[in-house]
Amino acid sequence: MIDKFKDNVHEAVADIPDGATVLVGGFGGAGHPTELLHALLEQGARDLTMVSNNAGNHEVGLAALIKAERVRKMICSFPRASHSYVFNQFYAEGRIELECVPQGTIAERLHAAGAGLGGFYTRTGYGTELAAGKEVREIDGHGYVFERPLHADYALVLAEKGDRWGNLTYNKTARNFGPVMCQAAKTTIVQVKQKVALGELDPEVIVTPGIFVQRVVVVSNPQFSS
Amino acid sequence: MQKLTRIQMAARLAKDIPAGSYVNIGIGLPELVANHLDPADEILLHSENGMLGMGPAAEPGEENHELINAGKRPVTLLTGGAFFGHVDSFAMMRGGHLDLCIMGGMQVSQRGDLANWSLGRKGEPPAVGGAMDLSVGARKVFILMEHNAKDGTPKLVESCTLPLTGLGVVHRVYTDLAIVDITPKGFLLREKLVDISDEELRACTGAPLHFADDR
Image (tube, rainbow over all chains, first blue to last red; front, side, top):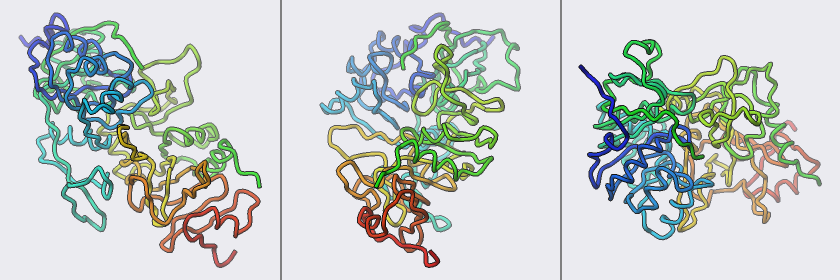
């Protein structure tokens, strides 16, 4: 019998090693897997590369990991936000590396990784400093930049409901990077607000099919930080 | 000469959006445009974080922290609206499915180059978000910005000196003085929005400003 549920968040993240590349879902506070990140903090892994749209807020979740000096590098589209003072300070002091990637290019690089593609050409970023050093070509009169897939060891994602096969639904704009991050990581770990019995999710509304999910853990009332 | 207020600028731009358009409105000044749309026009707003048919800001006490806009503020969803993930959201942008995007600007060049994401300051983390994707993807790109920076420096320029968002991507600029189109020969005045002479307007503009022959 397939049962992807773990008893608690600590068990779910126990094997993440030093030096891992970890995808972190969420856009602002919506979809930020705070409890999985706090479990990773307690677990002690360091020298991590974290991929996330933002760089954490206040001193919660991703920001807590950065503050504890566990993160070597952030791959991020919008690290600078009103409450991202931990990242800002580390960056200003040269204590953390940043790869700034356009938001849609992060999404599509993850998609390429999850879909087995060797990369893609995009108009996004052409002629800008974010394309510096990258291969470019002209297609139908427009300049395009070649972008490589973004593979990861783990993904930490927040979803709404999950069953023991790992089928998931999301809530409103908390979906954001969740589905594509589930595809892009070797091991995807999801915190769901609600565990449901197999068959309870309408097959027509399952957003992430369980094949993309390796572990699920219930966190009924996740902490929110904007 | 009285310049337009930010609200007047947003209201003027809003008048030019055709009914039934799919539109992405950037954070900052462009957000004000949403307050001047007629619901009967069914102009559907796209939010990069996975929403089409975005409604007004949530009423106090009705906020849902999992229903936010690109500026991370609580909003609502119109009846008929939809949620989706980032791959679909950015396919809508890059794939040319949005009729229009409205962004703020720091500089726009006479060739339509846009700079609006970075002041290039050392020690300050660069943060691009979805600006580059939007600039290349939407069928039309309108920039809503003051004609001149606070110190008077023109924001309509020959060549951008700030880090670029996109090359040759801007179609039209709405400022607190005028509406200016980007054409193959450069900046073309479309409409004056205040009582200003041709000479004064040219003096406020950092590159040649052309006037239509039939004016």
